[in-house]
Length: 449
Image (cartoon, rainbow, N blue to C red; front, side, top):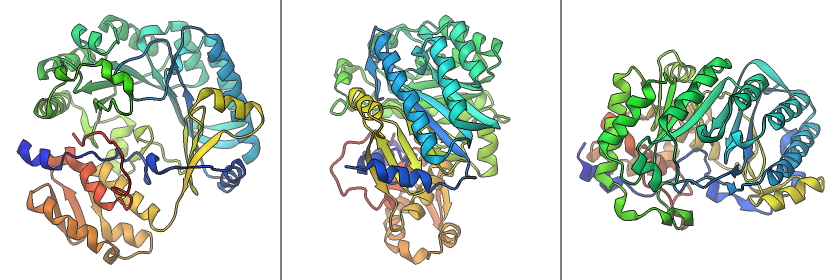
């Protein structure tokens, strides 16, 4: 596809890890309402859990996460005390022993925890919930500062999938983003994971970083392939210094331009597929026998705040400062500021800060957007039938597709929208047509490509 066509539609749009999206969450959510939402979850419904560990010992300048830099361990220990309380408070509100089939530890850097604190964290979770035999338990790893002893603690707790942050292996790029990480260190951590029985290994890479070129991105992939990962996440760097002021430390003049970003993305995707990876959604790649590739093939792939996932749960509970939960009644987010989060929890009150209840056709539109994000295709007739609605409700959106069909970005026939293979980078722009809230408020988003 011609780059001028892609540029025409390369507008700032949400990443659609949820619908409605997080910027629409409203403040002043009562803790008592959150308890009602928790108790409304059917007892037999398997849960997904997310725990946020919002600490790192250094700041990566590309970072867009909620994190706090510390060189001292005491604040982390104090935070963990509050996190333990929140886990047990939540379980008590719902009834302990609820089934869990998916858990994810994110940050920040969860692996900043000392092994003993990792063990205590799993003890608390096992006291509060019951994990199914096939539960996937995943952790994000910063390979720069983890020991084999720490990996052993995570593995003994039940971790069976790990995501290693790599981004890029070139020294010039690493210095420009303040993340010095020799490839040998990453390889050593991957080896330790296998030795401790964790064989589900993901590698997180990025394109669009300062000083990156097509050749450097491809060389990073070749080096990463020597570690035999099962999955690759290939994210485009989102440069939004208005939201993340520390990104101003990255000189804009050394960032790849639109054409370079697009070439990096497509060249990387082509190389990964030549290694036998299945291209999944916007930015994921998996070996054909990996559970994500199987879910993609079977039509059960999902998308949530962690991105593409095999997580089948219809209720995700968030723990920790800034964490987001997705419940049958709506989305809820905890207080972002660590001090205020701890003050609420330590006083015996849930630290909820924002929420948005589902209303109107939110769940219908969410299903359409999720299907497009996962498969780049959606049958409006099937989804409308599932939600007891009519495709006629989307006359406006279907009419708005005309520009996309004229530019050969999508095909539309008999209620089926298909994003053309060479235009998949623009799927978020297609999703925005079905976003009833998009454009209603001034927001800064990352570009579609």
